[in-house]
Amino acid sequence: MARLNYLELPVASTGPAADFYAKVMGWSFTDYGPDYAATTTGDTDLGLDADTTLKVMLPVIQVDHLEATLAAVEAAGGTIVVPIFAFPGGRRFHFCDPDGHVLAAMVPE
Image 1: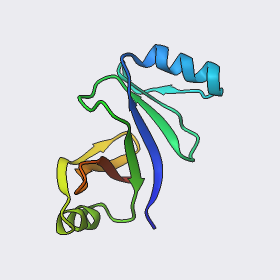
Image 2: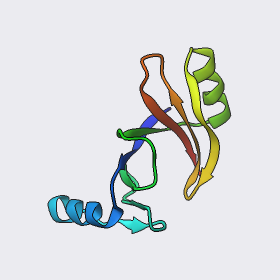
Image 3: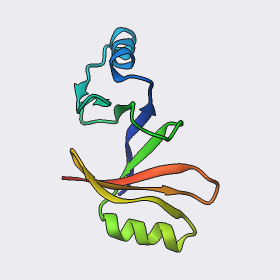
C-alpha cells in the first residue's frame, strides 16, 4: 500500500535549517553532501534540500512498484516532471497531478 513517508523542504542552506529543527523539535540530521540533510527515523522523515529549483514542500510517497506507479500516474492524467533516478535510500520520480501539485513516488533500496 502506498504511504506518505518523506517530506522535502527547500532551504537556503542545510546547516542553519538543521540547527533550527534540532533546537525546536529535537531532530537530528544526517548530511548527504553540502546541499542535503535528512532525518533518519524510519518513520515519516524530513529532507532539507538546498540544491533545488522547487520552492514548495515535496511530499514523497512510498509505493510497492515504481514503474507501475509511473505508468498509473501517466494513465490517470498526471505528468512526469523528473524521470526515475536513484538516490541514497532507493529510487524515485517526481510527478505533477492534474491540479498542478508536485509529488514524488519512491521505492526503498
